[in-house]
Amino acid sequence: MSASGVQSAALMGTLVTIEVVGTEPGGEAERDAAISRAMEWFRRVEKTCNRFDPESELRRLSARIGQPVTASPLLFEAVRFAVAVAEETEGAFDPAVGAAMEERGFNRDYRTLQPAGPFAESSGPKTGTFRDVRVDERRKTLTLLKPLVLDLGAVAKGLAIDLAAQELQSLRNFAIDAGGDLYLGGHNARGQPWSVGIRNPRDPGEMIETVEVSDGAVCTSGDYERPAARAEDGHHIIDLRTGGTAKDAASVTVFAPSAMVADGLATAAFVLGPKAGIELLERHGADGLIITPALERFATRGMTDHD
Ligand code: AMP
Ligand code: MG
Image 1 (tube, helix red, strand yellow):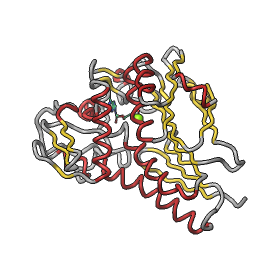
Image 2: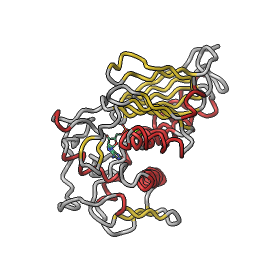
Image 3: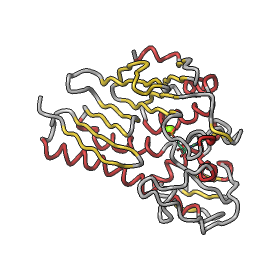
């Protein structure tokens, strides 16, 4: 079999690596062009959904309170899905988490380390929740009924992975790795299903379990991923119902056909904790493993299918 093609780039606050196994069907040049097109989706999603860039479509939407705004398919899809997960979890998951993130010091663009510009568009308190976001499926418009700061950090990477995977579909055997959130197409260079390690959240060098995946996504939310600036503020996943950092899980790994679904459900299950989190995954027909801070494991019934 001919050599694999691999490209890496720092995007969306993480290292994105795309590997395509072999060169079929169109040869090396076509393969490498497809990998570059797949990478481009991460740039596009980052540009559209960046909470720190006043020029991003997300921030421009935040400037127009009370007016329906026609959204690009990318922004519409990310917000539509995030609001649906928020409704289902009754606000445990809430894309209006941006103001709370800012308060905890998550207010810097990870690329430039510049503080986010002030939200000149609405300087008052930003108290809105997902209930203040109207999603009009027919007109493809979004309306913010109250000032709020949308944060799509829980779903945007998954959306970019799905779009990149679509770009590579004809190449069949490939791996997209965006900082441990993955989509795995077909098989690896040895002709076997891809093998994914689930880390011990308290010792990330150690694998708790290894799972085989083919044609599917795997996303993990872990409390070790992004600590807040002040230790007492915990980490980057917030339970808006308590106002504190989410504490009932240490990591959640979700397997689903779509990376956006796996990404969003992993964050949502993290906030819900083991019992309600597993129920959420099972309702969606997704599989997953929740590891608590005491390293107890909670798995969906279907988890054994992946072993
Ligand atoms: P992930 O790493 O996919 O679990 O996503 C974590 C990111 O989701 C954080 O960095 C925030 O941008 C965002 N986030 C934090 N808490 C919540 C929440 N309760 N609901 C929705 N998004 C959240
Ligand atoms: Mg997520």
